[in-house]
Length: 118
Image (cartoon, rainbow, N blue to C red):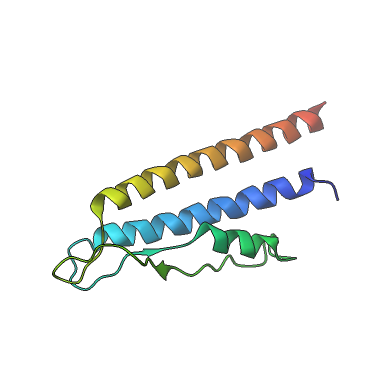
């Protein structure tokens, strides 16, 4: 297989990662005032480790990534460590990544369609 055969499955997995990451960030935002709630995130390195393993680009394999507590954030008096500004920046960055990935996969599919048409 050539490199191009891996691009669409990899982009699809990256879109799944962005979707899962969005849910985690949204959960953090929803719990900004919940006592003792601890900020979570899905490390990008975890996604990279997953897709590097043979067979994990298959549609049949579920993308299972674990949200982990973020260490080193300032904790408020109620035990909550969600930083609203940090989470808003994270959700914006994740949104930009999602938009870029969907544009890339759309471009790849359009190129394939054009090649088929001739």
